[in-house]
Amino acid sequence: MGWYVTDLISSTKELFKVRFLRNVLLVAVIGSFSISLMERFVIYPMFASYLVSIAEDEARRTARHLAMNVDTRSGALTVDSIPESFISASDSLLETFGLRKLKIFSPVGETLFSTDSEDVGVMNEKTYFHQHVAKGRIYTLVVQKEELTAEDQVSTADVVETYVPLMNQNGDVAGAFEIYLDITERWSTLKNLMSWAALGTIIAVVIILTTLFIALTRAARITVERQKEQIKLQLASDIMANAEEGIIVTDADSRIESVNRAFSELTGYSSEEVMGKDPNFLHSGRHSKQFFISMWESIGRQGLWQGEIWNRRKDGEIFPEWLTITSIKNQKGEVANYVGMFLDISHFKVRESQLESLAYRDALTGLPNRLLVKDRLEQNLAMAKREQRNSAVFFMDLDGFKVVNDNYGHNVGDVLLQEVARRFKACIREEDTLGRLGGDEFVVCIRTIEGEDEIELIAKRLIDSLEVDDLIIEGQPCSVSVSVGISIYPEDGEDSGALIHCADLAMYAAKAGGKKNFRIYEPAMEEETPDVGSCGANG
Image (cartoon, rainbow, N blue to C red; front, side, top):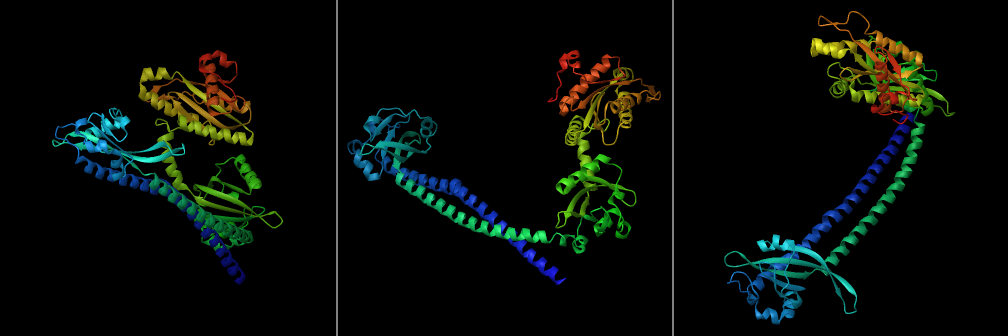
């Protein structure tokens, strides 16, 4: 017992290392991405905005100082409003205030003054000038300016252009200053700072991730080795006893060797009652022989099977469970045991049934509607393709139903549809699907079919179900029959749409042939009903 405890503690420590290192690695990755994203989308824009706001504040202060020298008594600014000191000393004006350029506009956007004399008289046609500045609102934007250096090379400068409205004594816009401030140096400093910060973050993260990856790889390798050594220990009874799932352990011949407490609670059988038995004594009878053949084929190929299955308790109650069966091999690679773990999913099935009834059931008959029929059919086709078997679709339309509706009313028609659905349901296997598409149209999806003899047997059974004389609804005798069209997978189509379409064509052919009979789809039916479309293996 001592070696078992020591080994278990050692394995637990190694597993803890893997999980801890994995979590640290995950945090490091997320942290690095978060820091990079924060630098790119939060810190950088924040500092950029800060630089622009500083430039805008400087422009406001400069504008307030310049405004003291501008005459606004006449209302709107004109050329005469500009002081002579501005015109005669424009270069010193730029140097005094540290500006790159200065313009003064009239309220309508005419350039009254500019440190670049070529701009004087030019109208400002910018939309933002008339939408913001001319209405008394300050407006700032960042632009890049290109200019020739002394060496005749083109350089780019980052410039903040701030429009500051000038108000007259009446509170109206008299004009506006456009103040250009060069922030190239400050902007470059910010970019360099952010680049170095990003580089430092990347280097730090790479070092952390590399270290953690090496440590995680070593710990994971040790843990995997430990886990391989502990396969038999995982079957120990003390682990099984505390599991919430029901557990069955069998030998290689599927004879029960042990079960846990949860198994007894879920099934009602004690361990003494089941010891040495084959677990198939729990079978509910709801699954076909092929179901279990496929299940054991999967276990043989993959060593594992998972799925939903119905079993029977000791008191006879049938219940759904989610079952996982795993094969355990010895050192020689031979199967030594099978372990089955299951959970009672009855409450999930109840909820599933409630949701399905709302979304996938016909309100009148309770049968699957068009959506659920399509889903069930696609499941059938997937299984048929996997098992290389045939499947079939029966498309049925009632003959004479309109007469019943016209003569006795829709209430009688509704009850008749419910009775027809009940009779059709009794003609098919539990694993097959009967659905109502609407009106008096029904569909049967046969999961697996052996040949045309079986198809004809099912079709005749459906037709004969309406041949009895006791079809009396609400005291009214209702004489209806059914025409059946049949398509077969895979020769008539390989998807649900194609098979339903082909079965529909065959049904029309059955009606055209005198009703109350069935027809199996043939390509020639496409020409008989050209407006319906065409079938084929690809739908």
